[in-house]
Amino acid sequence: MDAFGLPMSFGKKSKAAPVNMAAKVETTKRAEAPAVPKEEVKVEKEAEAGPSRPRSPGPSVPQAQDEDEEDIGPMPPASIAGKRKAGDATKASDGEDDEEEDEDEEEEPDRTPITHEIVLKDHTKTVSALSVDPSGSRIATGGYDYDAKLWDFGGMDARLKPFKSWEPNGNYLVRDLDWSSDGKRVLVVSGTFWPKVFDRDGTEETVLEFQKGDVYLRDMKNTKGHTAEINAGRFHPTDENRFLTCSNDSTLRIWDVNDRSKQKQVIVVKSKERGARTMVSTCAWSHDGKLIAGACTDGTLHIWSTNSNLARPDKSCETAHEKGSRTSGVVFARDGRRLATRGGDDTVKLWDIRSMRKPLAVATGLENRYSETNLIFSPDERSILTGVPPPKAKAEVGSGAGSGTGIGGKGSVVFLNGETLAEERRVVIGDGAVVRILWHSRINQLFATTSKGALHILYSPHSSTHGALLPLSKLPKSGPRDPGYSSADIQPVIFNPDALPQFADQKYGESLHQRDKRAKRMKPMEPVQGVGKGGRLGASAMQGLVHSLYPNEVRFEDPREALLRFADKEKEGEGEGEGGEE
Image (tube, rainbow, N blue to C red; front, side, top):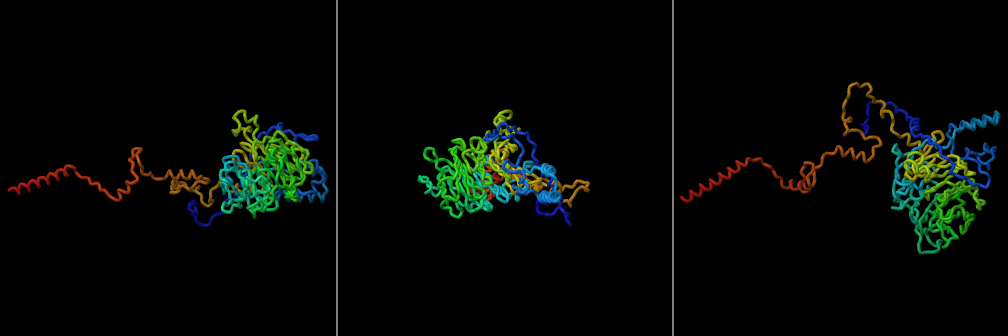
């Protein structure tokens, strides 16, 4: 009855049972994985690097200033925030001792969102691009299967499927995605010469496709667009109409969405290699939009100021990473002083923008198998996060590499100290290598993509808000749909049409394949076309038409009577002949 929109009972209905969110959240709790050894990561620094330790504010931040400064990162829930404010007011009025303050800080729970997770699985190959809009309500993903997908937390049900899936550039893999600052547009960068900008719903009719450059022109400043494959793209952090792209044609270009015929500015990267050209593998804006960073395959790292003419970089390091390797990630810190890079030489380096001759710290032993592997700062900027593949030594033993059994076949997210790059924590994510990661500060949830086509969303029920918690309320209910209808007091068994299999309601979460299979099971037997089989005679395609035009009524007649009828006619003919002779 519910399938036809009819009530299951009459009269006044009782209120629906409340959703047991605690039980549903408990089903998404992550299993405690065994600790991963940290011996593979080595830290190189001029000063003495201490061992791995819990997160601390760092040596550059005095301990006494933590109480006066504002908290950086995601805001705590209202209940926790209210307790903190009330506690601070009480301490200020009563003047409690420092020991009691230390005890309160120790009792504060860890707000890192790693206790629970949901998995979005719709890609068939490596998920190489990831972006979440500023509000934290929609996700954009792209992969090696040529597809770009849009996910909406508010519209997802228990199946956890995207509402939009399309191929932005045909048979070209998606390398990068990025939302605009207002969340109304999404930039798609594929293995082509031209970027594309779609609206919030991914409508292909309103796509903005930008100009391709002339490949026969030598001077890159005179071309109207890129002349080689684009590797990455980023929207301006404050201006929703401007975005940045980098390409294998040794240029970075700044575009305006209101002018698709030509880029707004061109940054030509000159290399000391033969031909004075290199490939720019990744790029990034600073958080205020005043600086642009670009890393090249010749091992160089450049920083330009947007207030200049962009002819020469303001800061540069010729030996930032190993020559010939592909730097896959670069990110600015909000303090305007630090810069972190993820190299193809299996290292993570921390730089001081004011002096880039040598890195502040270097972390080695972090394998990088994909050119899209990125790194990020945590919302409080005390940690640097990056993804790593399964360890080779363990993946080769037992079930085999990438089998997904045990910890050997699972990638991880590594937490590095924001000042020394010492490893603090390693969180196991899932099967395959971890490629893209993103920590959204507004909803306090950690996103991680893998080479198996999955998107893992880690959250904490105590410190996270919305996001992954919204689809949980739409999981199948454990109780009856209508509490007013109950058959507990009915003793005899009653058979009704709804109880028969052909009239059964559609199962919740039934796929299209299962629905077609169920429909075929109730379909009547069709006539056999062509040659007969299974003891049935076949019929030609025109047999029905012929029967309709020339109806043939089969009359059952005794053959003896038919022969005798012809015999009587013959006798009558002979009698007439004899009479004529007379």
